[in-house]
Length: 322
Image (cartoon, rainbow, N blue to C red; front, side, top):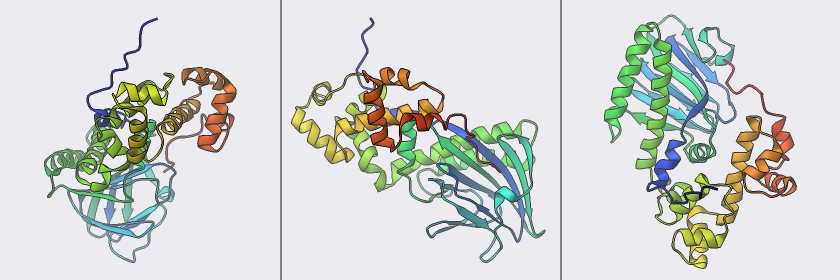
């Protein structure tokens, strides 16, 4: 049998960012005329983004956050929170899912809406990140993330990407929906990277643990080889720390004991693979468990339900219905 390479990557945080691959995505080119307003209802674990390419609007997120958006500005609304977009305060905000859309395919549509006044355009989308590392990262984002292309360290890349999006949204040439969706994917990932680099909140907790030279290596080893028979002693040895010092430091930085993190990580992987149709029996062995009973107990402890309940969810629709 070929030996497993347990050497950790040089950049554990970079490895986590590698898992920011979008799935379950829906994009909408929105042409509006004042006065206008829409409500985006709460939708599970979707992250919504809104790019204003012309005109202005107010973004109001459930929980009290309000942000004015103008050309060259981007907002992310993570965690599936409901929110409203409108041209000015007090304008009616009908449910966007009830408005007529022109569909190009099952992932891209055009919405035309408003009262016939001054025009504006937006590119909007709902995206999901299925990999557990990506979900862990997105869970740390604030209720509303706002980026302005005219200021900050992210100005150059944001301006360039938004200019391309604006050009495509303005003309809608053949194949434009493909270009818009891929540019939007890049924009969302870039925005999350910019937040990690700039926000003090991203320097602590799980992200802070990834940045730690020792703890980050241990987390990367768990991510890369979840089925390996890890113990507290073996992980400590891999990062050249004593068992007691490693255990204390991991808990202090990551916020939970290392073996609890290992179990939780395995169970997050199990959930995603169950939703993809994997059998419980094969997952138990694939994730380092010697019996289905032990695997099922760990799964229920983490997710609050047996693996069979997750299996029943497999095959259900994964995209927002607009």
